[in-house]
Image 1 (cartoon, rainbow, N blue to C red):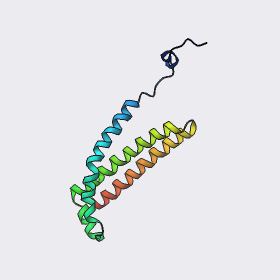
Image 2: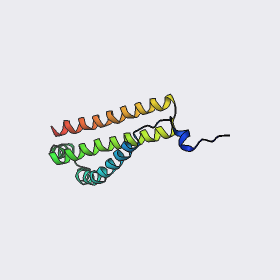
Image 3: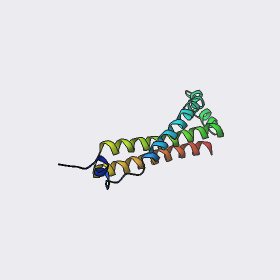
Image 4: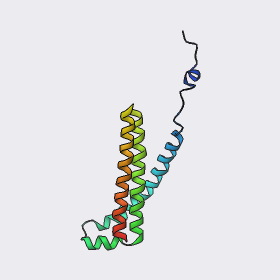
Amino acid sequence: MRYLTDRKRAVGMGSAKTGTAHFWAMKVSSVALLLLIPMFLFTFGPMLGEDHATVVAYFARPFPAIVAALTIVVSFMHFKDGVQVLIEDYVHGLAQKILIILMICLSYAAAATGLFAIARIAL
């Protein structure tokens, strides 16, 4: 027969100590994306169907390039945090660590590729 309370059973189990940080990072990036996605659509939308030279000239201007770069960075960081939470919830053991590392590397690589492409056009 166990006379332990829920608190006593939880003592010593530890905590990840990152739950609040993840929560706020997701909330802040969500709000940032609420502002960035419409701005990106309004700056990127008129260029659909245009020829290559027109698009390059348009994204060589600072405002569209900055909006595109911010959208890429914030989107991939939001993706990274969201997928990490999903992996932590549904995958356990060594596979969890491997998948988290792979998703972080994929997110940073995709963001870096996008930023490199914007920099090549803008500079």
